[in-house]
Image 1 (cartoon, rainbow, N blue to C red):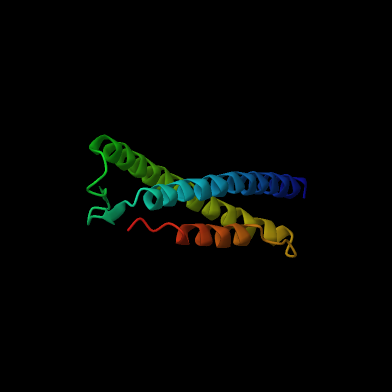
Image 2: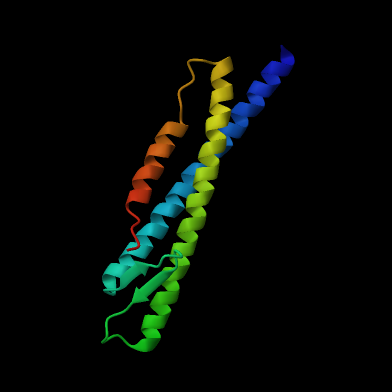
Length: 131
């Protein structure tokens, strides 16, 4: 019985840490996507995704080449960070779901916190369209 309680307590602590980490990552992801979208809109950039998932950034012809290169690097770096955070969030959602299933075995009335984070993640991802 004590071992089961200890396992439950550890699972719950790990679960709450995951929820906390998810909240931070979701906030970061929102800011990164906002920066990506703002950069593209404010500078009238055209972003395309090639078949190998590489981004191609097309700047207006009147834009200074140095500025176009800086913006291109910025957009590519934002895309890289967005993809990293997206992967991190998905990993934590998966781990949290597993822990939640284990917690619900001991406490069937447990209310999910993962589902709301998964829904938020889906909404955030829907605002990211690099093409």
